[in-house]
Amino acid sequence: MSSSFSAWHDSPFHEFNDAESNTSAPSRPLAAYGWDDAWADAFAPYAEQGLVPGRVVRVDRGQCDVVTADGTLRADTAFVTPHDPLRVICTGDWAAVEPVGDPRFVRTYLPRRTAFVRSTSSNRSEGQILAANVDHAVIAVSLALELDLGRIERFLALAWESGAVPLVVLTKADLVPDPVGLAYLVQDVETAAPGVRVLPVSATTGEGVDALAAVVAGGTSVLLGQSGAGKSTLANVLLGEDVMAVQSAREVDGKGRHTTTTRNLLVLPGGGVLIDTPGLRGVGLYDAGAGVGQVFAEIEELATGCRFHDCSHQAEPECAVLAAIEDGSLAHRRLESYRKLLRENQRIVAKTDARLRAEMRRDWRIKGAVGRANSALKRGHLR
Ligand SMILES: Nc1nc2c(ncn2[C@@H]2O[C@H](COP(=O)(O)OP(=O)(O)O)[C@@H](O)[C@H]2O)c(=O)[nH]1
Ligand SMILES: [Mg+2]
Ligand SMILES: [Zn+2]
Image (tube, rainbow, N blue to C red; front, top):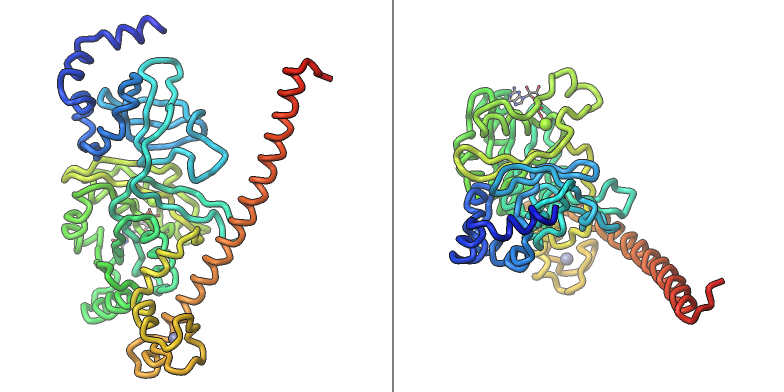
């Protein structure tokens, strides 16, 4: 094994690479996966150690699939599965993989530009990372069901918080044949999504697909939304072939059994990278205060006009938010939803803080015990 390692190091390929600008030469095939000069710079110290860059396209228990300049390989994730679930390697990460070995280990991954995180359920304070290094968060909302604006606002808060730019696609637009009705639905969603593009699409008729394709042609996009929203169908349309498993109508009507069981990252024929996530039954906020602020930007803007800077917009005099509800320019539903998401977020943050404090205490107890045992060992007092 060590001989093949040095053979790799001595290869003319590697010399050529050194002669050119540091790491970018063997990584050129990775450009389609989003590799750029900034990633190459960040990777330089690992390249010096002989590690190979690659993008994580799928994560399984203990292993992940990584696309490298030499093709896709399966690597062991033991080194990148820390106790903190937010630091576990995930789809979209740029991994530093050992050049040889069986198994080959991912040694580390590059600092993330963006990260899409949710809490695993609204009652727990644990975060779960769904995708890393995403530029566009495409939130799929089915027009086959009654619009749930609160749920859209929740997805948007998580999307803004991730650092990606959100886009709402209203799927199955073919089921709303009346253009006036469709325009109303789009407007409703727009009031819940200030500053966000809202695009009706249909995989059946092709409506809106070109506009969506133009957005996702640059950078990395993730498809988010409830199970059955039509994410995999859209992914297949964008990919130009049936790659993702689509649920039968019966499965959708049932208890939301997930056909898409693994996350996948794929290069689109028109450029760009697409990540399909499994249907998310629930997305709890996870430390998404800034994201909530961005979803309700117009309320936060109004609040700067309130007489009291800590106005709770309940009954205070000269409250600009209540005045806007009074004159009809702000929907009461929006304020209620804002409050609800703020409360939920504060609850999660408080729980997370309490959990982290408890974990820190436990870590110190363990470290303390290990430290005492070690010094006892050094002094030769092993009991
Ligand atoms: N009428 C209509 N049905 C669609 C459209 N896109 C998807 N569907 C159906 O919606 C169901 C769920 O689709 P799927 O892509 O598996 O959803 P996912 O769970 O979000 O990945 C399937 O039965 C699809 O055939 C569309 O544009 N129009
Ligand atoms: Mg799916
Ligand atoms: Zn106020």
